[in-house]
Length: 275
Image (cartoon, rainbow, N blue to C red):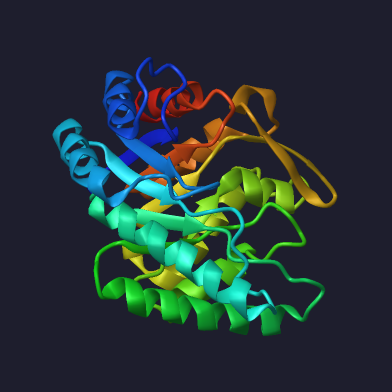
């Protein structure tokens, strides 16, 4: 990746025209340079639409990522749901690849009151299948398990980093608001932000810092973790300190704002980071 790029989760709210291609053009008008395809409820882009999306993204110099469906659970004891979850991620990757996309993130699953080590091994088994199959059509796209914001859900920073060590086409998707919410208010100082990136580099090397896929927005939380996303200025997340740490590490990759105001927070971070 050439630099740290900022973008929206989905089509910008201010886009007057419908469709992904129009959304990409609007992202460029907003002086942003990334957009996440939101497959959270359905993989809505059909194969015949992907050439146009790829062409527009390349012309506008917009890097595309995607968020796979929310209803994934790679720790499901129901074999049908387990393999369906694998399919959702593979299909998300296939469409994103045809669009010329860079990275596919997903929430891996739930503990379901099981031993975390057992859950890790089950999810690792699924990711092994996913990465092998994805490599058959795209060896460059990144598969990204995401850090969780909820204590009942798999995806601590250590679990996600360890899973990334196991496979050469897997890197973490770090959601900084999720780290903050999951820890009930921690991960909110320069030292803590630095520790995360230092750990990431020590486990995965400089390539991980040159190919980040982050989410960043405000968040409301309780002792059980994330409740809902907010705009950055309505949250206690010290996002300016976080952005300073990103600059210190000279990161490259993509930062996606999943805020209710979508493009406003993406622009806020972009302007602060680039000043």
